[in-house]
Amino acid sequence: MDNFPYLFAAYTVIIIILLVYVFSLHQRQARLRQELENLKTSLKDKNK
Amino acid sequence: MNSKVINLSLIVLCGILFIVALYLVFMWVPTEANQGIVQRVFYFHVPSAWVAFLAFFLVFLGGLVYLKKRDPRWDIMAYSAAEIGVVFTTITLISGVIWAKPIWFVWWTWDARLTSTLVLWLMYVGYLLVRAYAPASQGPAFGAVLGIIGFVDVPIVFLSIRWWRVQHPTPVIGGGSDAGLPGSMLLTLMVSLAAFTVLFALLLRLRYSLRQMEGEIEELKLGGGI
Image (tube, rainbow over all chains, first blue to last red; front, side):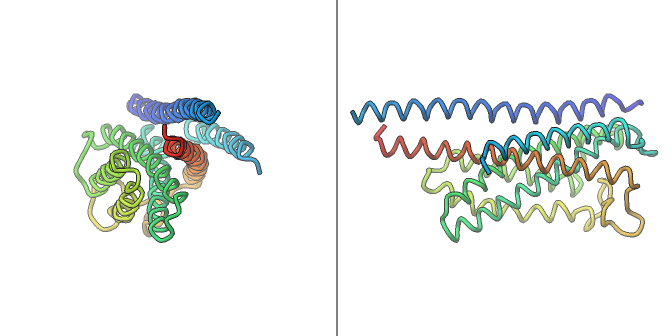
């Protein structure tokens, strides 16, 4: 069990990197959806 | 089939496979006699490398088809795969470094496998930087060329432990008569490989849809004069 801290560190880093990436995808998706909505609304207003 | 249903199915399948993989890695598979408990890093380190190779193959394929057909969907796939490939190469490098310290007593050594993997990571980080800063009209073509050239390093990384004497462990699958894994370790590795492959498919679908949305926004901005 001497090497347990290394095993723990490795899996913690793997899980953190994956979670950060998935979270960043989610954030980008929310921002792009909002931007798309705003653009569509402003284009509708412009064409009125 | 509806895209949301496919994504949901992939999420459920991915979750089940990861739960099973974690159970096998931490509760079921026996501890390797020479390396001890830290050898269990192998079960997520190898699948990360596999996913990175798969991602960079898609960048290569997407680049080739884009240059031939100029169909933006192939470029979107290549770009999405490149980003995911960089994430999984980062995981491969960091998990390898952490494993190396108790086994080799150093964090890093400039052997052929490690160095060629670092070069691979740098090349695809370069790919993403080029895509971020190149003009929109030229980015896909520049990216395609870089993706094709960068892929040359993938077989070098894969074969480096066969071609040269390296500190990195020799191949356990297809590595000759004295290579091989016991059944329990092989099963654990296969389940982890399946979990990572499904995760890759899911992430690729998500990143692809984001890239499409980015393109749609650009088109609306150009078309609407915004």
